[in-house]
Image (cartoon, rainbow, N blue to C red):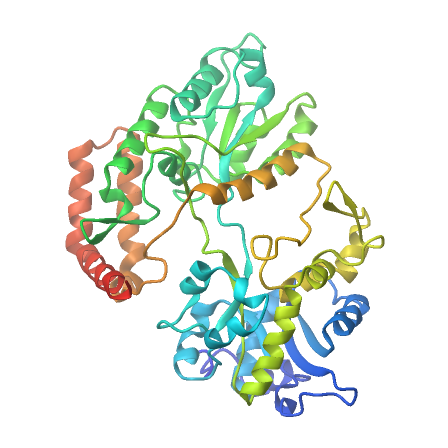
Length: 496
C-alpha cells in the first residue's frame, strides 16, 4: 500500500484531526517580519511531554530562524505522518525511515538534495559512504543523524579473570581460554562447579554469533568473491565460526539451550553469576553491572572489542551510520531558494556551537565540561523537559562534527564501553549489498534466511555435519537464493 494514498490506515476525518496545526499550507511565506527564515517541522517525541521553548528560542537566535516544531509522541508518530500525506499538510522537514517513503520519493514528492550539499560548509562533511547507502536510485533525498556503526564486543567478569590470573582476551585463542577457565576453574571461588563461560541467546545477529563470525573474518551478510556477491554463509570463515561454537557447546562452555534462550534469560545468567561472558552490545555492560550489584556487590565487569582472528581485526558494521532521516517534501518547500534556506538551518545545526546546544543544552545550566567531555546535570526531569527532545532534529554526529562534545559518564565501564564503540570504527566490515536492490530478496529473503539460521543451530548442536549444512545451502540456492545472488551481483557491478 502506498503511504501517501493512505487507502485504509485512517479515515479522512481522523487524518484531518491528526494534522490540525500543520503549517505545510503556509510554506510559501517562509520569512517572518524580522527577516528570520520560517521552518516548519514534525519531530518525534521520546519523552512524556513536549519540551519547553527554552532551547527552541536559543536555536532560533543562533540560526536566525523562526521554528514551528510539532512534537508528536513516538506512539502515534507514524499515524501523524500518514495523515499529513493524506491531507497534503506535510511540514518542510520531518524524520522517518526512508524505505517507507521510497515510492513517494520515486513519485517525485520529495526534493533531491544531493546536488546542494557541497554549497554548505558543514553538510558537505557528511560521510559519503553513509549518504551513498541512503540514495534512492542513485539520488540523495535525505540527511542523516549518526548512529554508532558497531556497538559489538565482549563483556566479561573482570573479577573472575583476576581470580584466575587472566587478562582481557586479544585473540580468539585467548577468548576460548577465558571461557574454558570460567567453566572449569572455579572463577567465583565458591568451591562448586556451577559456572559457564558464555551466555548467549537465540538471536543470530545481535547475539554472539555474528560478532564472533566477524572476528573470524566472515563477510558482513554479503561478500565479494571472483566478481560475484555471495552470502556470508558461503564463505569458509562462516564454517570456522560454526566449528568454534560447536566446540563451545560440546565442552559446556556456553548455555546448552542458547538457540531457544531469550535476551532476558541470557542477561539473567550473567547477572546471577552463572555465566562470565556476554558478547553483544558493549553499552549493555552498564545495565548488567547495575543489576548485578543488587545480587553481588563485589562483581566487576569489563569490556573488550579488539579480538583478532586469522585475518586480523574486524567487526561487522551493524548500521549504515544513519537511523531515521530528514526528508523535504515538495508540497511544503515550493522553490529551490526555500530548499536552500531549510538546508542552511540543518547546516548550522552541524556547527559545533549549535550542535552542542541542541544535544546538551546550556553549559552551566544543563551540563558542565569535565576533562573535555559533557557531564549532564543529575536532574533528568529538567533534561527531559528542556533538552532531550531536540536529538530528534539533529543531523550529523561525533564523526562529522569533531568539536561536538562527547558524554562524560561517572560509571567507568559505561565510559569505556562508549569509547570502544567509537574505536570499532577503525576496523569495520561493511556490507557491500547494503545499497543494492534485489526483488527476490525483498520477496523471500527473510524466509530463505531462516533455513540458514536453523541449519547453523543444528550444526552447532551436532545434529547435522558439514555435508548436511551444504545440503541446506543448496536448497537455499534452488529456492531463490541463486536469483538473489544474480540480482545483487548485477546491481553491484553496474554501480561500480
